[in-house]
Image 1 (cartoon, rainbow, N blue to C red):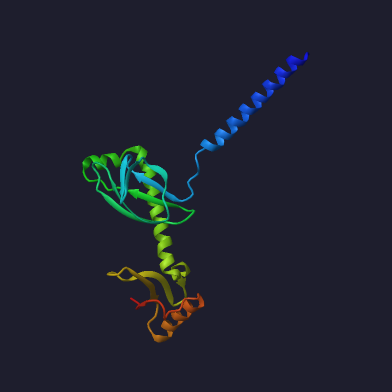
Image 2: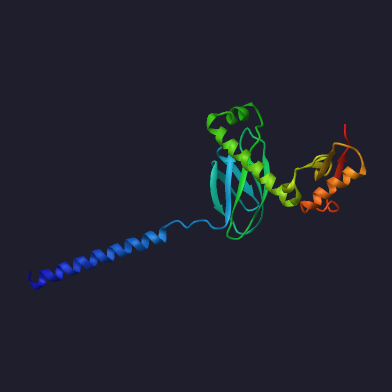
Length: 207
């Protein structure tokens, strides 16, 4: 191989190498950045308009959008469905899930929600709401996770002690009436690290 041909081969190789480097750099630069702080919307039905104080956009079932940390209030609307309002708190470096199932506003809305494709989606949202509700409840009332407690003469379980405020406490169903059996139940709470003086305790007399 003569000198001139060798130079051509070297130059061609360098050009190819430079092109490869450019392609790699471009791929890195244009690669979509993963959302680190924002909201994961999961909504039924499709094509729901989402409005907040300073923006409006559409969501088709599931989408993650970037939001800065803070409190947000959203209004979800779609034809044939009742407008729904939800609030959420976005934290730094967290994707906050927001599951929304719009309530049908007429017969057309009812028919849409009965479509086969929506059934697993509705079950998913329902499951999340149950889990989130349970987590919120146990966060507010930590003693709930330690109940029920079953003894020979008592059964202690979590219950709503105030229907107006939806406040939870411990309900004690006694097999036999008397102060002795009440004290046994209270001791059982203490053994589970539940201080009966700090929560509402409601005794139910034997039937």
